[in-house]
Image 1 (cartoon, rainbow, N blue to C red):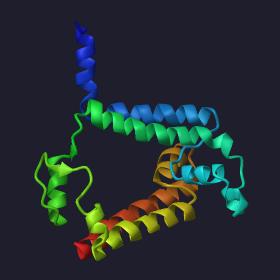
Image 2: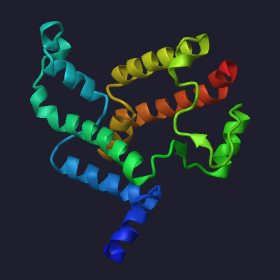
Image 3: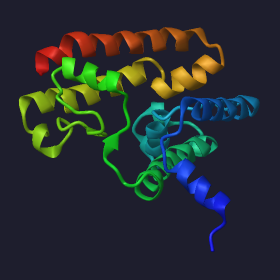
Length: 196
């Protein structure tokens, strides 16, 4: 027989966690990283993988001690596998995003006619079929290029600057995060309505 506390724990972790659980967990992780002199960022993992595969023979950008950054690669792999395990075993394998009614109304104003409780995790315009349309090409390929270029130009991605850089009180990270938000607002209110 399964103890009651295990049943309650499974019920707790099978629901989206509120901000007051996730926020302090992120803060704790960042405190540990800062204590050990580490900086977190997902986009750095592409450079680490390229360097590990010998890209340093072709470009000086990849000539660095990638083994000292291996822990960051483990964080990215853990996020991928953790997300998979959570979505397939603990969160019911649902492809539906848990968003508020206000968010659903905002999506309707942008032309996405979703109903509460029926908002997909991945919008339909991120699919193989839409990749071969002009709109899909602009969003998926063009957006991917801009995100990659922006992360390289800014010296890090949103997670690196917004979580790690801001927690270390770095002014360049604050400027980058402000730029990320401005870019998101421009996309949402100016470019997205033109495309859709």
